[in-house]
Structures are given as C-alpha cells and as structure tokens.
Image (cartoon, rainbow, N blue to C red):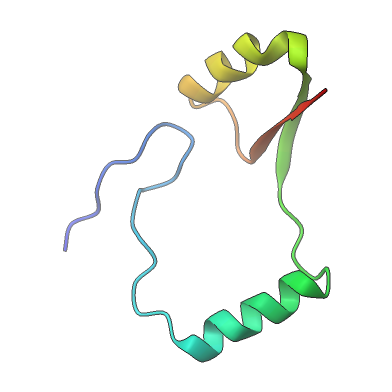
Length: 69
C-alpha cells in the first residue's frame, strides 16, 4: 500500500498498522509510569497562537507545539 501524503510536519501520514494488543498494553504501561515524554518543539503564549499555526502550516516544527495560557 503506498504511503499517503500527510500535512507538513506530520510525517508520512501512514496509520499504525498491525498493532498487537500486547504492544498497546505495554505502551499504556510506559505512559502511565511516565516513561514516554512528548517531544515539544515550541511553547507559545495564547496571544501568539496565530504564529504557532503559521509555523505548523509551514511544516517548520519537529515536535509538538504547546499553547500556554
């Protein structure tokens, strides 16, 4: 199956395929234990949301974008 083209900054757009329940259970355990840390590229204040959206649309982020308020 060919990969779908995703939005800029969102990777190749392929869905997670072939996950086993045991894999998802292990992932849940890691998340609950604090063993998974999200990659935050930038944190914007609420008054800079439009700038954050522009960066996302331009594909200029490599992690998550957080908005603080």
